[in-house]
Image (cartoon, rainbow, N blue to C red; front, side):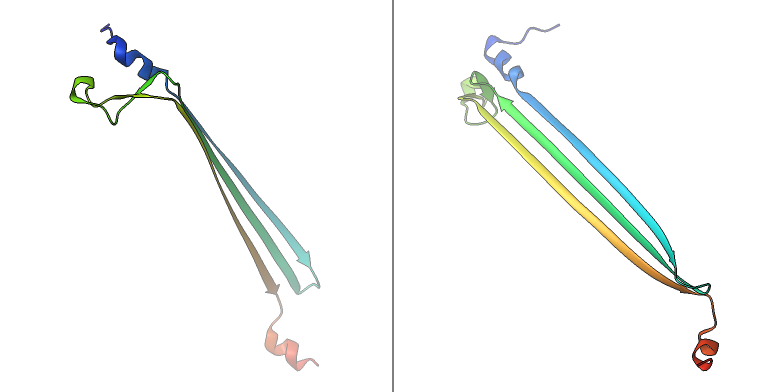
Length: 109
């Protein structure tokens, strides 16, 4: 195994963590009003959450702002960043089902 130069070992100390969570739900209901009319109701939901964090310790080399002698790397004073992204989607559908001929229905009055 090749040994890294001492000035680059601290670059390995960077910690990156990310996770994702997704939640799906679907609900259905049928409501019967009469023998010839009913209503179908459907509700669908989706929630997705992404979280990430990056920690660069104070004794870390970064890939920017360096000189040719340091191969383009510069010494970092340390940093920490966290981000969260959440998206929500929902859909509702209502369907009215009629089992009788509508022409006969209106003429029956």
